[in-house]
Image 1 (cartoon, rainbow, N blue to C red):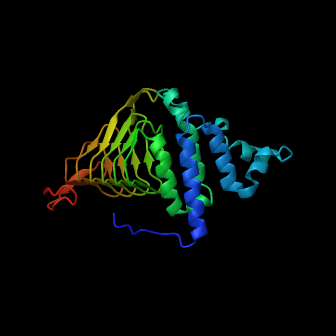
Image 2: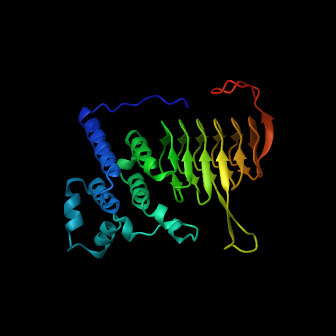
Length: 266
């Protein structure tokens, strides 16, 4: 994807980052750890540093301050997917504390660090997603619905502000790239009855590029090495190697070069 490796110059900071991720990773692997409490304590520490424990224990603060502290506990917040009738409580509520930790990390000062953020989100994704491959790069403010219906392959890059609506199922293949503010859906509504929801499976194949502000609608499949142009709206499946643009997205060209990963000619 053309990225260069970034290292942290301050060795003490790098050690702190590594220690934070290692400690969090160990707790996520421990079935005895209460994930709600883990989220609550971690967010208090990230937002208030050494005072985190004192903040959680404080009782004489204003209502506004107590509201902030209460919101660190995922049991005290409701997220949009909890209002969906097709939610699977058994799968979702074991993931909800990690989803809330991801969300609030992104909104914290610490969450603005891409170097740390990529590693933290990848760590959480392996416990949230149905599948999370190797070397996945997740940028700021990526959102998803349930997480448990989302499969992501190796070397995938998902940029800022992307929405992955996995109410149905989303499968993202290896080496795919989804650019800033793109939306990928796996459910649709009946035009006569908004409460009549159809769940679909949306597939973004290997080496696919979904570019800026594009929308991929439920039930479509983007074939290997295909591409969706900026602001394109995919309403029908795209064949391999085809470049689609527009609303609705239509083919304007078929690639005539060797695929960089498979070696096949488009």
